[in-house]
Length: 354
Picture (cartoon, helix red, strand yellow):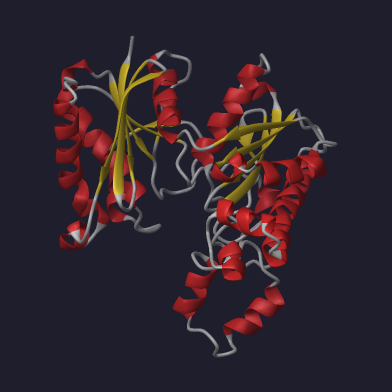
């Protein structure tokens, strides 16, 4: 039996879980209230504060650190890399410290894993960070050399549910073709061909709109809006990534509330919900062409996959391509532990970050 500590740092919380093989035996979310982080200039500076909170939580739960076989953290904004489980080495830690690709709480995942694992003499890992990039050269061409397409997605959950569905089919992830639609705060739709995520819409600026993101917008009209003087750069970026999407139309980010309004006769809410499902279905269709129509399953996952209305609408439009499987929610902690466990069991080798 392998005991694994999983760590998922967020902007306002630190989620931790301890697994014995695949089974979670302890879970806790430590909330960070008020201005607790104002004393830190960079996200990296929070590492000792969060590490002490994790150690306290384990001690209170009666979990001895020397009983752990590995520590695994959520991967941060690293350079583009192939999917898989990575050993946290000096190069990876340094990139997370420098945060050249952006400050984000997830940058602490690998840092905390190594900080807690090194004194115990056990390995530290990260699994399928958001910067997983397995796109083929043809997928990087946007139509303007100044603006190449690049991969930024919900790789951890997308690859985890892809492996799960492949197992349920009695096959390996490396032997199937899948289209995975992660429906959450952002929406990313990715084609997986024999174990590689060969394309994906960048969830911050492409593809379907989401509860508060604009998704892909008409480029000509957007350019004119940028130079209209109506918004500053900061205001427009905030609108595209935080107050756009469904929120811009309905004033709510909660799909359940939008559904209640639609059920009560709100025509605008009904059309916006229909449009969300419509755009996701279109993106699934587009990604099916990347696989030349050879799709074994379509997978709907993420928080919005709990919505029967949206799932039904997407399924109606896409089930002609392949059977649709629904795996709602995000099992990030379980996915992190599973990635570490595959390495500990010798099912795959830990990748080296360079």
